[in-house]
Length: 539
Image 1 (cartoon, one colour):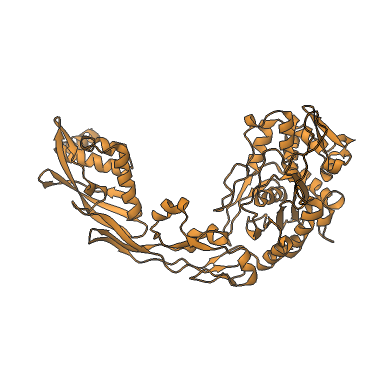
Image 2 (cartoon, rainbow, N blue to C red; image 1 turned 90 degrees about the vertical axis):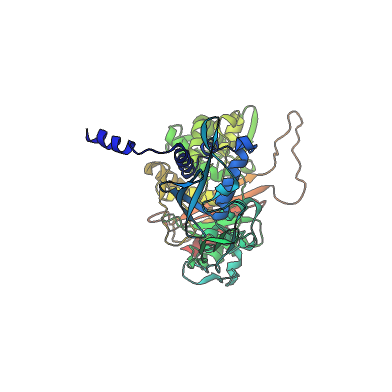
């Protein structure tokens, strides 16, 4: 009874049709429903398409850096015009409070908004154009994790010698980011981060644009630019120096991070953006999938062989080595003859799903970092393609960051840390596998360093867990019936050298490392010693 009475009283207020259509127009605007707005106007009658109509509103919102618009109660302003108070929350000009004047006409006996370009933003008058003048504040200082400057404010110039390897460069707004930054008030002639930390932490270093928002020559809103505080990164100068030295003048990438926090301690070269086949480091994922599926057990043994055959094609072990034995020995010596067939037994669906839990096909969470990928299960192909995928070949592509996170996941008993470059930021961990499986894999990764292909990463007095990878870049298998191999056209090795590791492998892990060296040779001979340098610095 009370509800009915309240409705009757409220419903008793007569709202003219002109106000009703104007209020519906404003409500659709607040909801971002441009199609509904368009349907309430006479714009179509004047030859303006929905696409042009929508573009006009989106352009005005970008100019104004509008984030949200709210409307109040309407009133009749006379001459078939409805006035509606509006509050527009903007990034660069603060809160803009203006009145929207909505002219209403009648078409075929139905009230419609008489649309004109003056309706793209509250406060505009006929003939006025919405425009702005904006500026950025001085760029924030970039600091190492110990508080020492990596780059000066406001010019972004690197300070210590190692800073040049990680800080990156400033430059004109890239075309692919123009729309995004324009909507934040960034001037067209601004200098923004293009590479390195300057790019990855651009949103924190840039500060907030400010300026004036104008309707013709009339001021609609204004706010001064707001500088951002100095950004303290996760980069450890000593670990960064070790990574730079270990990389030398080689093409590739080295990354070090804390498994407990996801904080990136060092990044030299292209560890976040360089995509290459990960080779046998991917066997960590295949092993997890095999243990979870029950197609492999720590107690299993395998024949000692130099190769395996899938779909009538021979897949050799590295350098034709004969290996096998226990599962741990097969992993420690990186036997393709064991892990390619294991991938086939696991199946494409399970293998791909496991890789995705480890971070493949997912945004890494760091701006500018590349996404590691592998084909969808249904597109991998036959058993030969699946076996090749299981050993990190085929169409698998990974960054050193992703593979370092794979190692860190094992270190964290199956929980994958979410990486960060901001000191003190905690993004948590994503569950990947159970602790029992992770510990089984961790013990086998220790065997890689104590007695397998990764002994060059051993550190006296420290338990190190790792995995080598030697990823082939050319197909050197014989063409059917030819008996010949594809020749190497130059003296460069035709393999990428990989190594991933964490330490200490007993007790609380302090650091995980990913090393990827393009066309550098064998993972055990080349990448493992580089990883050891970085591990020692971090420990």
